[in-house]
Amino acid sequence: MFQPTRRQLATALLLSIFSIFFVGRMVASATTSVQLDQCANLGTTCDTSHASQWQNGNLGSSNSHYSEGESVPYRATLVDLTVGATYGVQLEWDTTQSGLHALDYITSVARTESTADACAGISCSAPVSNLPIPLDPLVTGAGVTQVA
Image 1 (tube, rainbow, N blue to C red):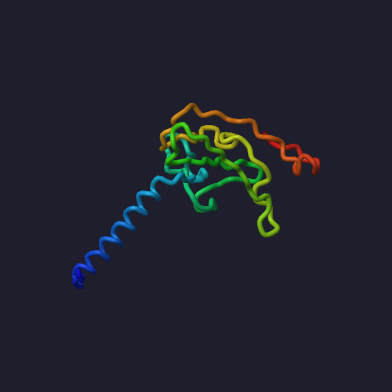
Image 2 (image 1 turned 135 degrees about the vertical axis):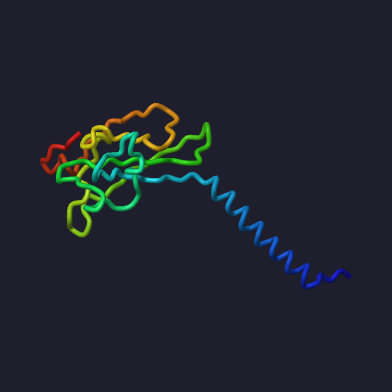
């Protein structure tokens, strides 16, 4: 009857942990993900010469100077997509946060920052196209004209 030694058991355990770690990493790296960036515009904008202005996290006075009524450019970068597969993106946003106005409505990416380039610093595989933004019934229902 075969009885493994402590060294063989330790080696088997380490190999098991090693394989779980690396197989888990390989599977995780093949998972589709979305990164949402926004344009920090303090000093410059998110154009092809300043791609680092696209960032995650909150915008504030330390990195941006947006005023009331201006639009913050956002971009969503999708990675690890499978060629030939169909994907959908659902956009949601909060109009208020803790009783204060957050985002009133969405507009085009270059409404305030006219030279903002959503492809700056990344590789866009197809020509960029802008879909029409539907009217928000909560905005128009309140008698407010939505900005396009």
